[in-house]
Length: 357
Image (cartoon, rainbow, N blue to C red; front, side, top):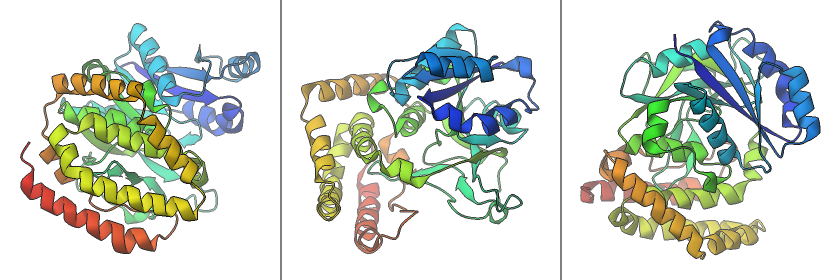
């Protein structure tokens, strides 16, 4: 049985709100307690947060950080766990309740095949009103070829979702709410990139893993109940959009980016139009300024060099599995449904016939 490092990230008083269900369910795991170690990366660490964690979660190792960089926090947790000799790393949110077999099934999935680099738990929405048949949060995430991410299976009843394979392959990316990654993968692709700060960090790691030739799978029996709030994501729109471009410019080959430019421009004009009517132009201007910095392009150049060394998969093969439509799951969006999605989907079908690299 493999020893596993569990990496949680706290931010200020975040852990105060969610520790009860998370910790109680963690202590009920069927995976032997002496075979896993919890690490809590305390972002914006303070004496009060450290005291709270030490008192309520004494078996955890606390790693202190001075700011709220979520990607850097995951990076620190993995680096420390590597030094401590762990071979498997689980990145898991604090705002969750864990099924008793959550960890056992997650480890089983990632170790079931050498070609598998990452496995994701089945995420269910935490809902006390419907405990017998909760709704799906994610059964693997979809990735639009322009870098947008969305959850698959969202809001479907758990009873409605079945799988043909024991560990279905995730064609998009793994949700960072609960994923397990092998040490060999981290050593090959590199650790989490702090430049992402927050959001799309799971896309960044998943995309790199796929380029290196690893599969990402779902572990359907590794169940986690997520206290998901859509409004929290929307508040971080700047990072979601900035990091979408960051991933596209970092991971596609130059000819692919050139091929995608018409659609990137088409989508950007649509987003600017949306921003005008939703008082979000400052956010789009902030994104534009980020890509006007020399340092931003230096970072992208460095990432591209690393990707070139590890790349085993063509852009063509990735594009086939990426989505041509974007699912806007909490609110209806007629412009997206009737204009953007048909155009981007048609364009994807065209470039699939052109691209060969």
